[in-house]
Image (cartoon, rainbow, N blue to C red; front, top):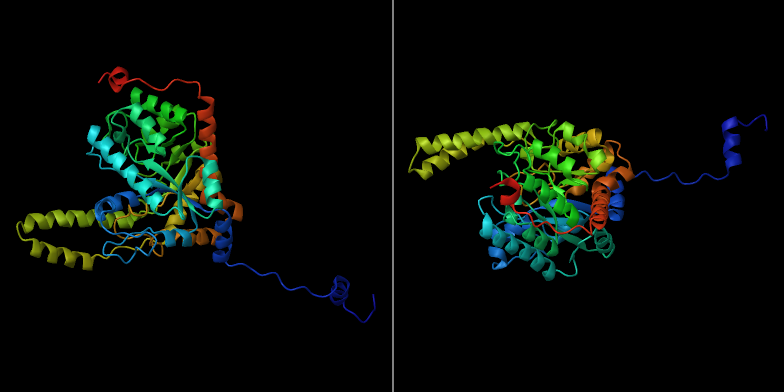
Length: 422
């Protein structure tokens, strides 16, 4: 080494000409790259009910190929925004009210399934029905949104395993065991317990879902039901749109002891974006508003104008507390911390979110906002890909393998009267 050259300069000469410094990606750029390769699979979107209620089951004009956020009745979902949000697969919820039971409930569910099929048929260049994890992968590669169906309540089968099987034949790939009220065989998270979990008929329905390859969805069910269903199910369960109860103490959310059961089961919690399940401040304000509305109805009976003026004044004095994306990320990270990176996903509840959505996340274009927040928190590309859709695909594939192993089992023909003595 020449004595007049510094060691650093000599090292530079030996290394040769300096190459261009590597470009540093922003979190947003990383997310665009990751989600382009591994699109989002969202576990829950309520657009079919919005089409029914606000657009008269598509008898009123509605073009999902255009921006629906500025319509007279705005929506949180349309095809351009699904593309901007990097959505590769969507479970469309065919929710019906818990008051619709028996034959009426089955008919309404079939009408909702029909809306999904008509939606896919209207936009064949953008949507395609999927039945398996392999279908999802193929449809995503074709640049379309793989469309699957979720039944959002056990009351929708009319206590009939035959109806359950026919839903499966029509494209239903999960059923939420209950909704906001108990049904005849499952306890809900938001109703007083009657069955203390699953009845014998309810357990048989879980086993029949395993046989079919239909995912058992535990959003909306009581904690007792969650534990029992996980114990009974041979396939991974999902929570299609639930958050973490330790972060926000709402019975719709998943308690820590249940999160710890998921690694052995293989299940996935798909985190919900509804502020009422995310933020204690938001929930407290909603409860106070409901109480004020009840008080005003008592104070001003028969005087709707005075009631409305007083309610508007209350709303002005009590603004809706913001729900930042960081809080959504807190729920995601809590599920990851307790259950593990392989057991968390996305279940937005878009078009089922009443009122305000999290800040900066108005609709289905917004998934990258959450992913960028997680990237800033140190999530790796692999972790982000698992959250986006990898975990749900793995759970589906496991459920499909379980169904294949049960192919020789006969269909369930037991009745609720025979098993539960009703």
